[in-house]
Image 1 (tube, one colour):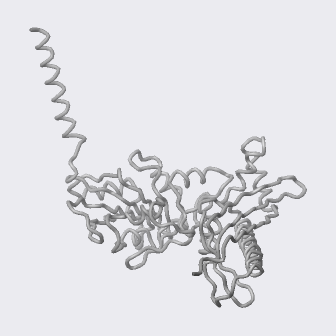
Image 2 (cartoon, one colour):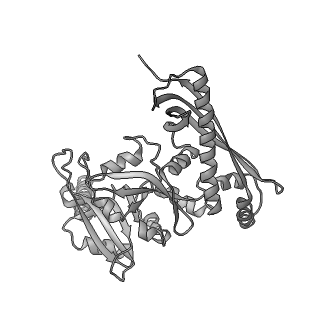
Image 3 (cartoon, rainbow, N blue to C red):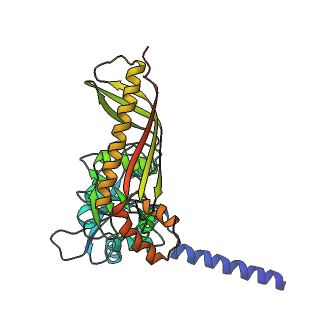
Length: 370
């Protein structure tokens, strides 16, 4: 008898806990807004520090392309925490950050500081550390306002683009929150972020911003972006253009790899960048007949062009004391000094490095012609 009473009391207690838990923590899907993207801008005509935009997906019973339902909520405030709480005071549903996968800094803000707002993202337990980081042009708010007609879910176009489950492009660079944060703290590499330019009904992503420890320093051109993407071993396929004897050839690469070898002796430090390309001729502007001689000429011309482009972009970044491909990490792995001594030595050594690129091209086919 006593056992049954105890069992009944235990069950009543557990059921009470479930009831309270439902009231405090659990909320049905129709009582939530899902925050899929966060934008941080410098406000205009305001004394506040930040302009925060939360892109919220509104749950729907049916999913149709181009009919996704979302709403952007914007708030100016002196802190991100204050802005989020003020936005929540305007809602009738709970803001759920479990699906936040895109974090965007406006280009005006990031020219001054990106470290302080990124610190908030890193500290929040509800922000995924694998969320994608990007620069919004002309602003983060403008990017979050874009509604592509081909998008099935709010921000799904950016999720697929940066998640590399949809489009594959030699110009698109993916950087996660933990990547940017880690590279900001590591003296051996410079952080970067892709630039998302807002168009009327689509995005354009073909450039990257290179950052120092505090702010945006340089925005690379599409060709420079492709070179950095290649040197960081983030792409295996791409297209290169080369001109010889009045004709222009497009070479599609099936295999593309790059590695670096460095020698940090005090007398003559240098870095050798080795690029290996295998591909096929995809297009000729003048319909030139591809003979064995022409094939070798295209290979030689492409080797010179790629080597020249690699050296150009790396020396340009070297002059700005920027190192997005992590040459400093190679130096760090080869020394046994204290961290502060190592950092100081690297600052003196990096501007003196002689950077040379060597490209090896093998064209396997002139393309298929029936």
